[in-house]
Image 1 (cartoon, rainbow, N blue to C red):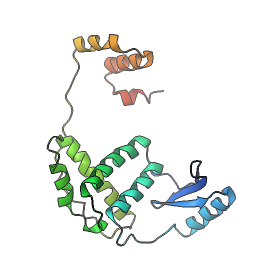
Image 2: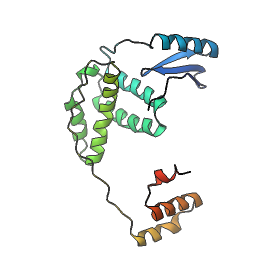
Image 3: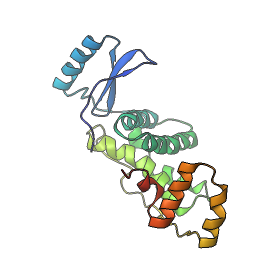
Image 4: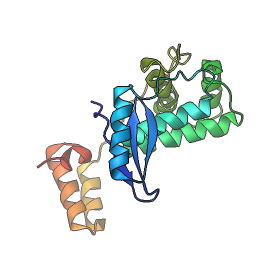
Length: 197
């Protein structure tokens, strides 16, 4: 669930920032003035400008700025990696609403070594910023909405008891060893176990 906007301080920029409706605002270095400006922006609903004519690259940048604040660092990195790869493929920027599903499918077709799961993720990474912008009313339409994606495959790789026993002596970290043992004994995923309290 998205968090309510709240100003935060960036030491490397010596300034306060806030993200409202997906747009990041620089509120300046003074704390009191920044909070006054924040309240003014909240009263006005932030910047309500439409992203008419906005480019693909700018749309991705705005989405990534929002993601960096509203989602986990891991989620931000996931989107950032895919979107950087896609912008390298495009080479030339263009208006966001002029991007076609064909452009995205050409990108994935250039990588025949990508699994169906990886291709699915790549396509979703481009669809998400468009869905975000469309839902916020920043774009009038979403040209990426109906791209056919390959079905992701479930991983079916399981360790045998012999493989498990062979791996254990090579794990030198006590904490990691305990995590692997707990995963083996319970069948839980490591990411689930790290959240157990």
